[in-house]
Length: 364
Image 1 (cartoon, rainbow, N blue to C red):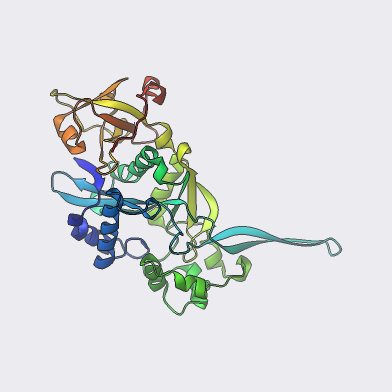
Image 2: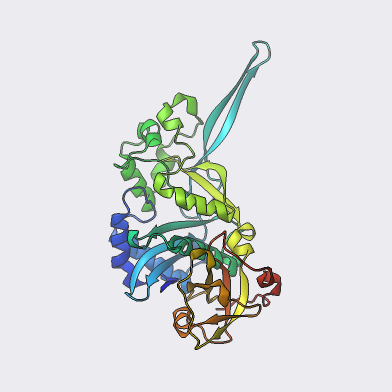
């Protein structure tokens, strides 16, 4: 059984191993033990409410209960751009026209932007290769939307994700080679790591403040603006299914797109329902197809836990749980829980709709 829970100190070794195997381009999770430990510390401070809400970093681990191993991580940054300026390029169009000459030219242009300041970011998604498939990536990513919905006052109404842009097997970015390298005397991988470490002041000091006219860049650079890395395409497809859309912003280093959505419009949020747990001794077959499974959370702020169960266990007012699932979620009969379909194409009977759910109440 796999369960989502808050990241803990004991996860450092597994997290470091995953970061080492992730390759280049995962800015928020570099293979740096000291940085990863700082992130774990901040996550624990956040879940224990010992830091300002806007400074919170919510990191969730995917644990294999059988082996006790951490096999995935995902996160939410409560607000970006409050202590370090957060930069993107906005892709827009500059129009130059002359009626006398009969000239009307539209030029795609990049403008340095801080538009996402004070907005919540979903980030740090990483899953061990051995656990890819079987809906594990969906659980790891979509559990964050259940948390966002449950504790909305800690986050902005709009959330976004920066998608990894195009780079080759050596970590070289065509956009960086054509643009960033002209202003930064360093390799793309070094600049990306510095950004991930929080050393972003160099961007403001060295990046040109004037618009960048894309036709002045080589085709190799223009063609990757707004495109994702092949390894990131499944994550983008999942977010699009949740209701995220490209907002016209791209990463300043590799040109990866930024996608955003309002929390109330996210599919997982719209289709989630509240129930009461009912622990039963009758055996429950958990081995069902991804399309027939639902995510279930315990609705706890400090000890948030999510796993999956068959949709057939969900009744109009209750949800049947085996003792093993109840123990993994740390709930007992009568405790409130929240559910949502794991897969966007999965069945979700009309009589399970939110209007039939219990009145929402926050549970600590």
